[in-house]
View 1 (cartoon, rainbow, N blue to C red):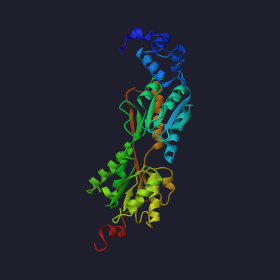
View 2 (cartoon, one colour):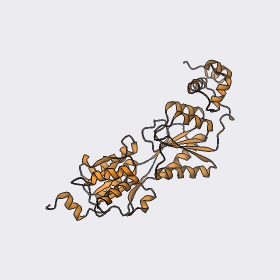
View 3 (cartoon, helix red, strand yellow):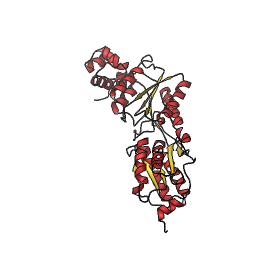
View 4 (cartoon, rainbow, N blue to C red):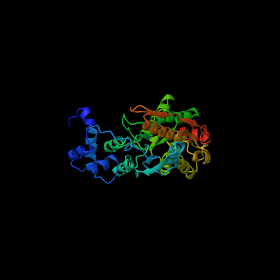
Length: 353
């Protein structure tokens, strides 16, 4: 399709667009106003023609509801509550409300969700998942609804604003803490391999071992899913090894709690027999016994930054080019880590060593 002269494009009327699309003018109006009662194929055809003709909505058509949309791929953990708190903090200060939804574990929300968001016309959308497909992005862009991804699971694209944390540095700090204590056999329970944060934390673990002159032993690496149960199962697997690790970087706090349970079941004491480091610094990390050494990921601050960014984008206060923000992680040392005990050393090197 050849793009017409801009002067001609700006003069296109809804009736002309309707004739070209083979629909009625009221249908074009429904698309413009984000109504959900339009067939997806019709909406796509009309949206393309609107973009092709360079149609600009009048100010009244572009009015927004006092809302921020917040969508998760799942809402099962305290991790999500920290993100919700951050978005709520910004929304409250701005006199806005938050619409919360979940994509049932999918890393991209369904088409129905995008239609509903377009109909609501919020100030912006904060996505706690990988991102949007092309049709969803086109629909929100055509409504001038900005969106930002928090802690993207994969690569959201060069032109998608996102807010994350220094996951590699966090993995490095967690493992370096254990090597500095004298541990030489250090296990890791990573998260899902498809997620960028999991891969970055695991790479930080490997880098810390390399810096300490220690080999990376594949027998000490387990994949988890960032939930308590996977930490328990992987923990049992690691701790039942004939030459078990004396310390484990659990990848996140929920997996660390599962590892606590596995250690108790096997009669191992934390930190006397096993040192454990988590990642996130959820409130429960301070309450568990012993309190968990962990890497603080500033989840609430990340969510606040994403909410402010999406509102700034909506006001035109930031460039349209991609904005990638990374907030610093930091190690929080508590009581779940200590130097390896004499018993632990004997278990590693043999009683006669």
